[in-house]
Image 1 (cartoon, rainbow, N blue to C red):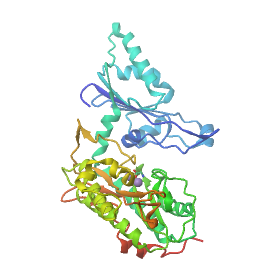
Image 2 (image 1 turned 90 degrees about the vertical axis):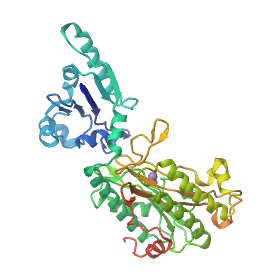
Image 3 (image 1 turned 45 degrees about the vertical axis):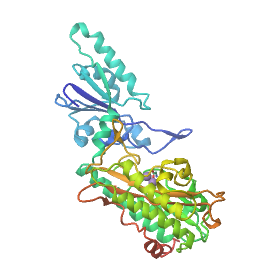
Image 4 (image 1 turned 120 degrees about the vertical axis):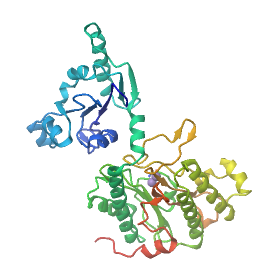
Length: 425
Ligand code: GLY
Ligand code: MN
Ligand code: MN
């Protein structure tokens, strides 16, 4: 951050679900990453090299309020449990911030964030210090984006981050295994979703890190399908894209498999293409490679396969240059950073160039093929089929580590697992 700089973050607010009930609180990702506190409204001020260095503002203890809406850590607990050098009740923030920011040149705070509470506080503190100029007050003159700063910090997973990341993915693996093993025709997608998320919560996960996608038949061609309400039919595929949160890190795994445990020949052909693309993409997730390169490697494999199936025509190199020729089958990019946010932070490019992968980066590799239900070019048995295979990859030496390797994806491995345990009574 440099000398005479400070970082100010807001812990987030409760969000209304309907009328007067709220969603369960989830702290702001950056706030939680730095201090671990999980309470609405809190403010964190970090001033490296100053005394105090780390200040928290938290809701004061209030026995009556705590009976209704849960325990509060209070200022005393904030210093004891979260390592703050000093902590104050929230309502003191407006009064104390000017002196805490006096002499700071650069204030890092989230720019462009949807946080109506923070900026007025910052502006009032700066304005107050400006007006103290005659008396020696020194106001910050530069605001810098804390989101960019934190993105770079979070992109390379340190030991603690990696431990949480691994745990999130391990729990995710367990959920997928349980869901695949219990799948059979005539269950509903929501029943599989329930089993998946039961297995997340039973192992202490705070729940899914994003809306679980459990899509059978042509629901699998809807990329963010979360209704999860259809009946699983014999002969169809089921696509599950879901991740468990642990310490607010999330897994992000997709598997696609036959509801009845056997791929049809046509499904098998399409699946084999996506699997080859997934494996080729993972093999390219090397130190020094980049996300664009992984995309091109996956895409080449997908296009080659689409050509073999006669869904596209022409030379692979020419097709690769003409997005319109294939994008209706491939739809999306094939990687994103993974961490506290499912689409995690950190720049994808340095300047305009794709960022070289470094040890400690975690990313997904998730190629897919989606054949629309009304695609007359496709053989009838492939119409309305969607297949995606997504793994979570740690970039390291000597080669990438597939954190999600515990969920089978080979055709034989998948077929051996589906329907092997009864759905819970
Ligand atoms: N589930 C969201 C994604 O795979 O990016
Ligand atoms: Mn993903
Ligand atoms: Mn996903």
